[in-house]
Length: 262
Image (cartoon, rainbow, N blue to C red):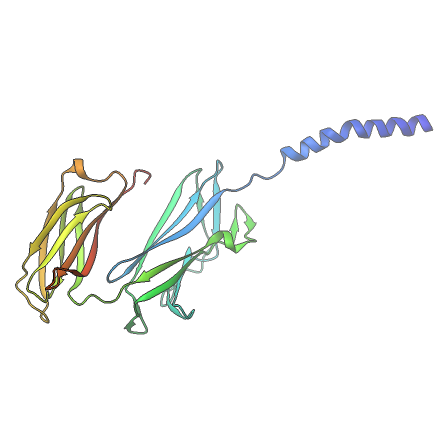
């Protein structure tokens, strides 16, 4: 009897390591993904770039209870809500999925005109929070919502008294900029830079209008392809100069973004 018991114990000891190895092979793969929001505060509106990326080596599927993929909320310094993406919108009440292949990236872009309850919000610092509305990942319920939430701060500028409704079209070095202006001294200036180098030196433009009358203006910008940045943003800066020569009423205009990873 003792010999039989001893043989059983030895047999279990021999099998145990194999069982442990088998369990390790069956352990779930750690899912690697990132979710973030990049808010860009322009002169007249904020642009929200939302990114969901699969950073792992396996496919990931996100499940959503409705057609709404994300929520964006902006609060002021007193934690009062001034903007919510879903306000006034309707979403299909259907189950939807989003599958990302390894290293694949999904990007969404939304914008906000700085108006809340019919009035433009005041200049200052605001907090922007984005949340992915997925309830499960690869069939498993989302336990930690922090992985699907990102918060950033942005500074909203005051309303510009000289420039408004400025838009840019074009690309690859050829751009057309249109807007309205009412310069105090009948003229204004612009430059173009990429954050490091000035690609177009200060140039004067006389729209033929004077404050407080608004008048449309159009300007064409051409930059040699060899001078375009490989990575970064191309910015046109509109501005006036005071009687003392100081730059005032600056209004930046994004012409194009360059990113080799996109």
